[in-house]
Amino acid sequence: MVKAKEYVRHLKAFDVVVVAFYIVLTLLNIIFHSRVEHWWLWIIINMGTILLAFTLAYLETKYENKFWISLHYWYIVPLVLLTFKEIYFMVKPIRIYDYDHIFISIDRWMFGTDPTHLLYKISTPVLTEILQIIYGMFYLLPIIFGLVLLRKKRFIEMDFSMFTVFYGFCLSYLGYFLLPGIGPRFTLHDFSALNTQLPGLFLTNILRDFVNIGESIPPGTPNPAEIVQRDIFPSGHTMITLIVIYLSVKLKSRSKYFFVPVGSLLIFSTVYLRYHYVIDLIGGLAFMIFTVWSAKYIFNWWRKQIGKPEFHYDKD
Image (cartoon, rainbow, N blue to C red; front, side, top):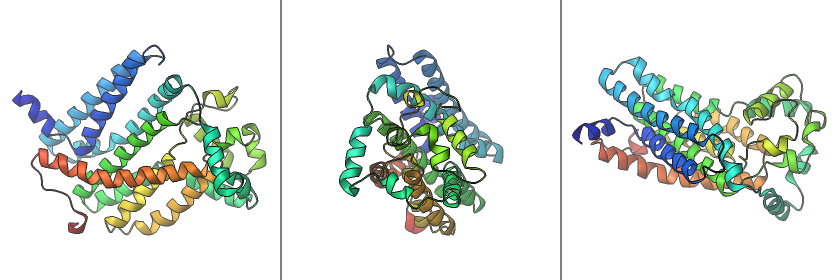
């Protein structure tokens, strides 16, 4: 029993989120095993991931060298993508119905029309190219911010930021179960004609294909709307980008001069490029506010459990 407690004390706050979230996913796989394809395989992967979190936390504490410290931080990056893919196999079988009609109605109530049609009036190949490139930088933003913090050896801020970002990703993934949807590029526009209707210059089509492959619809996929990932509400791009902007400002990092303008354009691009409804962005904002409000309490609660001092922005 004492040995087990010692292993738990090695965990950082973001490890605790990993363990808790993968337990939740495991329980969902068990409850809905009759609907989720390869549910047993996902349970094995989830248990392996939990074991990995404990192992890396222990090895970092034992050896305290740069290799294990770095590996402990950065294992979260592929984990975000792995979790995203597991969610793909769970949301549609469990929830069955999409709720795009609700999102469309809310947008039309707010704007009197569809925002993607409004933005089409200002579209140009140059603007589309710029926004598609920025949209493709989404996963790089938290990584860049983490590298900035590590370069300055701001380890406690790095711990808190990694925790908050991964916690935010997990909450957004849970949101996909609440109100699944596929987005305006399928419901309000002809997905197959997107490259023609909203052309870019050099990289737009390649980057679009890359995004589509990540959402399980490689080029030539028949009936892409049927199999695409249900991941529009809340807008994870909006939520996580706002979290990174918030942290860069609150932690007084000069990187905010990069994240604020680039992040703002990224959020705008989600509607311009027809990935999201505006209500998805509002949902992302609401989830972000809850995340940053609750993150500090949870983070400090865990630090108290393992005998470490509380984290405060004004002392950084």
